Structure formats: C-alpha cells, structure tokens
Image (cartoon, rainbow, N blue to C red; front, side):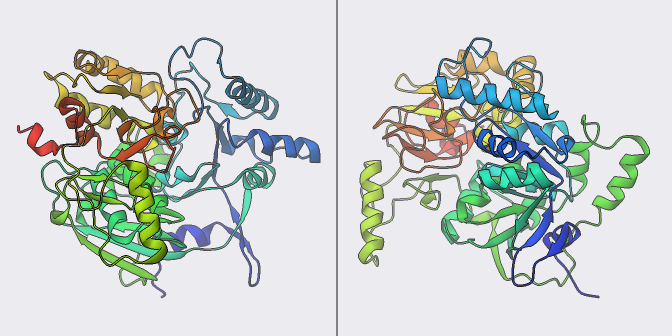
Length: 468
C-alpha cells in the first residue's frame, strides 16, 4: 500500500475532477469572507445572474479595515464604511452567517474560525486573505485566494487548483527559556528565506511542534506564507481534540466520538516521501527579531545585523536598500535600538494566550515613557476573557492601551497606523515597507519580546528583563 502524507490524504479526498495536465477541481468545505475581498466577488455574481451555491459553508466577519475604537458608532472612513455595509447587505441577501461589529463573536476571521470550532481537521478552507494558512494548525488544508477565486467558491463551492509540492519541517527537542512559537517560525524563515518554501505545502512535525498549544500552532502555520509556502499544516492530536471539544460548531455527542475516530487517521504514514525536508533543533533557537523589510531578514535578538560580505550585484543593492529604509547599518547590534511603538495583536498573535503572556510579564512594571503600547484582541471572545481574567487591569496599569477587535496595526488599511519614520516592534506577520503605515519601520517579534521592549523602551533580550 502506498505511503501517503497528511496533505495527500486531505487533498485527494476533495478532488472532484482532475484536468489532464491542468489543475484539479477542488471542493471547499469552509469559506471565510471579510469586507475587503468579497464586495467585487458578490458584484460579479449579481452581474452574471449567479447565486451562492452553498451559503451554509460560508462565514463572514469584517476585520481588515474596521476601527478598533468606538465600534458602536458609524465608521468614519468612507471606503471602510461602504465595504462593511456591502458585506452586511450581501450576507443578508444570500443567507450567509455574519459575525458583525459588536456581536458576541466578531473578530479577525482567522481567530473566530478556530474559537467557534468551525475550523476542524481534514477540512479544506479558503479565504480572500493570505494568512488563511492559520487554520492548518488543526490538520486542515487552508490557503488564501484572490477575489476572482472568492467568486468561484461562492458560485460553485469549488476552486480550480494545482496540487502543490510537499515539504516537511521537523523541529525536535526542547525550546529554551523565553523562546515561543513565534521565535520558532521566525527562526525557520530566517534559515530558509522568505521564498524558501515557494511552491510547497508545508507539514510541521517533531517533538517541539507536538508540545505546542493549539494557539501556538496557529502562530506557526499563520506565517507559512511568509516563506513563500502555499500553506502549512500540523497533524491533529489530543491537543487538537481537547481544544475543539465543546466548541459551538464542533460535533456533539455520538457524532463527536465518530468524528474523532476519523480525525485520528489524519497523519502522514511512516515512510511517506516529501519533495523536500528540513530538520531543526529547538535548542538552537533563541528569541528572534527581524531587522529588514521581509520576514526572512531575522536574527537572534542577541545577534548582529549581517554584513554585506559575500553579497554581490542586485542582492547587495536590495539588501542595502532594505537597511536604509530601516535606518540600520550592516554589522551593527540590534540590541539597544530605541523603539516608539509596540503592537500585540493580529491573526498571528492576537489570541488569549498571547495577551496572557504579555500581562504576566508586565505585571508590576510600567512601559517606558517613549513607548506607545497597543494591545488589540483578535476577537470579542478574547476581549471578554481578558477582562474576566483581570488582564486588562494589569495591562492598563502598565500603560498599555487595550483596543477593540480587528486587524488593527498589522496593516495600514485602518486608522491604527505607525507614523512615518517611527519604529514598531510588532507581533504581526509582515515587515514590508509601509506595511504598518507609510514610512513605518517594523520589527517582528514574539509577544514576550514585545513586553520586554515596552518596559525597556529599546530592543532587548526578554530573558534579561524578566528573570523569574
């Protein structure tokens, strides 16, 4: 019997038809939509006189450009307001479930899917957003799609898609003090580059991965796209099942036992072959931070920015351009660099565990005077838990501002922008030029590192700031 990977098992089970020398007609179990990439798709359906094939398989929420203050009031920005209004109208017209601003389960699409139990092992999941790979943490094939593909899924519940190559990234061993899942994935991306997994779907495996919580696994899979991968996934296990049990949309009663029995079959067969494989030791990983303008430009926080030694031609030119944008010099230390903003949030690190970790470490401390500190929960549920657990009080006493759920300062599509020339240490996923605002300078790091930077007011090793 042929040995197959987890990716193969899920993919092959969802192929409706294979086109010779072409893509597969691929069935989609769940389709998440938001206010930015859906309006044109719905408009095209209406123009063509086509309805939505299966509204019950689509879930909507506004997140990208919604304000994170005064969400009970009319949205001031005209474009944002129009997009949210169109989302409401389209969901009402086609009978699509909408978790709107102010509702109990509003939030970032990649946060509410898992916390509601909509995201489940063995599924195929798409959304008009590249970080749909987050859902792969549950042992699902999840990837981002474009607006024309959003239209295709709404109309047919299928997509035309070529099967990706397969990569496995193994991280074994025990991570050291102060090292989080964000550090694991930033380390991997720094090792293989921001394009090192282009054309692949990545399975993460190894003891260090298996020891992670579900929320930590989501952080890892979320950033698969930042090394060029089509998506990432992790085989489901007892950690996955415990997380999903009792969730609103998870199977109940006898259905639960039957479904879990199926979920337990979702793993790569021993001896299955990948197109490419990497092995890393968790003991080699330390707290990480980026210094450039793509997520692959990362170093250990105790390290120095790489020199141009060995670089030639356009590689050297683009590298120096990136450093010039950031205001850094080749070879200099990253520690000690002054920072203006810190941001905890996004679909990468806006979950309750992230907020708990920051609150735990800043308790009894005050943020530095030069720091503006934003905490943005990924959903109303996360916000509610943060209040109930007393985390908000701790954070506010430390000088952090808790805002309302949304994508916020992850991307410059809403009011939460970093001013030009200012430095931000961010728990989000991208540090491209202008990503957090025109001229903004972004350094990606873990929530723990962000907490340390907030207290010190400069880039620092969290292991030195929080000794106990």
